[in-house]
Image (tube, rainbow, N blue to C red; front, side, top):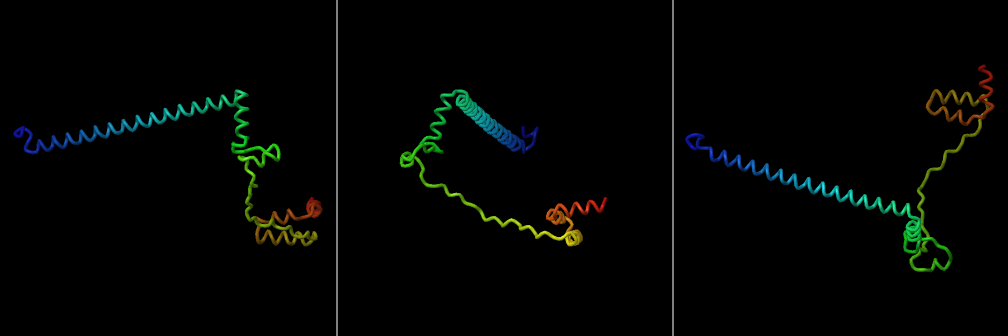
Length: 155
């Protein structure tokens, strides 16, 4: 064999065998990982189907829905309902008031004082010259008669 393939033939064959074994090991590991992933998806699918059946049972069977609702709003449920003063003292019912936090909000902008018609169009022209994108605010503060007079003059 050494005469036919050379002196490095055993090393080349050994390297080939090691690469082949590594590729086979990685293929087996990939197959095991894929099998585990598929089993996980299958288990998830079964769990979702069972949950769907449970929801369907709750929503279609009035007795089960009634029992679920009574437990949900009962003393051990997340939202107990107080029917009388005695139940407020019963253990299991929350009696502390819920504290709602309100954030700090800026004060709403105050409206500018109404202007006389002659001053209104002057201030509108100034606003259009200085800040045209906010000129609509001046129009919003105008009295309806001011705009009606302007439209009448324009016709």
